[in-house]
Image 1 (cartoon, rainbow, N blue to C red):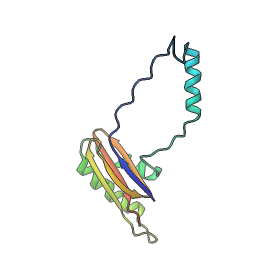
Image 2: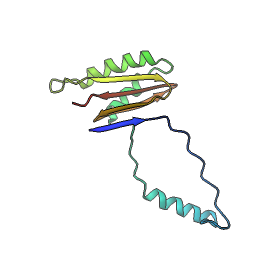
Image 3: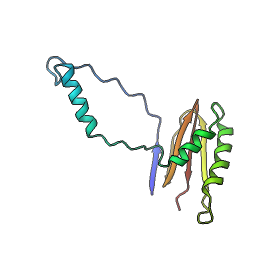
Length: 126
């Protein structure tokens, strides 16, 4: 079970210029080498989506500039695609104009935006 709590994230600050005195970078080559070292230790994890199928469904059904219509289309398509005889758990959908905050316990989820509409679809944890 995963528990998610998200908040809008501010834009990242620009990397500082290489330092020439009193700092760790003396030239562009050293700065590049340091950046590569940091990148080699970075593990990329998509914290907003753990299902490519659900991501594609959101991409196909979000209507830019219309959160309510997006919610209806995604809910209908997701429940047709993901409810089977073995699983009666439906997919819940939240859509809003712009980013939003939520806290949820789930193992199957995806958040995606198109235009100013952000949608989050998930299967309730049993």
